[in-house]
Image (cartoon, rainbow, N blue to C red; front, side):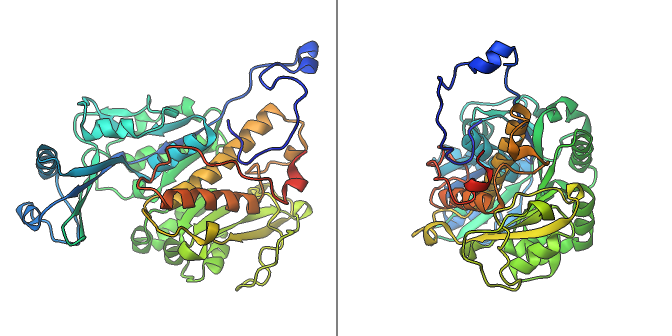
Length: 434
């Protein structure tokens, strides 16, 4: 487990050697390992440059997004490959991207639950999915299916217009019995997306998702939900408010999804209202930056050393050096807010907006995983006098999530393929580095 941020400490014996004092007392043991579990609709994003005639031949309306059946998707894919029109094939899926990025950042294990083609041909889209996935991601629990996984074609014509053809394939066929209970032992989070609950009648994915939530709750593993798109929320606002209140601990969204869920266009007001439903909220807000909100106990709140920020909640970041807790575990819960502007003012050129929010969520998951790892291996640390959700403060998590989002924005793929430069310790480390 890589820890989020550079920890400045001196070692008086080799780092990889056993601690001589613990060794003498017979207390040295193998470290506890943690991981993140996620459920996803496994799909591949396929980008190709085509002619207008190509679109007409497959009945696609230029500039629009259309759903196509598996047979037409297979014909389309075969023609693209035969004529060497494909420019990129990226492993996709909101949770798949998030888990991959978590494993790259943390250099640790994540477990993906979903479906995968039983027979995989070298060079196929399913093969590309595996090639673009971190070796730290455990894919051994994927359910085999006799058919294609999901495919999203981005077809670019000579005028630069993008037309999308989406084929679900078998990606929603994950059965409840394919969710193994043992993956939740020692997990630091279960990560879900709202897309999992939006399936056609008869598809088993929603039931599999609810079974996983039940197992996570029984194992006391925090449930994390990312909302997907505002259209999913707008269609069933009441359902999502109730679902989050009953099942979700940590909520991730962008400003449009936040407005759809809460009715508040101001991201700060939106995350404040979202705390009525969840215990910790992460909200990306494009050029405005990134917000976090959550709870801590009144006796544990820590004042910021940064400038106090104006907003619809005056000086809202006053206690941002505090660490998040579940509201139910606070004796006297206090709402905490934090914000950070885009890293370096934002990239000079945005290459890809797909996955920036997933990158931010991966950073938060890394901090949650580091907290579980440290609490289990160093239980006597002053960092764990109470059951905090994260290793770092609201402010530090914002800083880390913001940096990861920036890295995604400046590259072609939504998946990171290298770690980030080490962050410098910041002011709030004074409170927590003991």
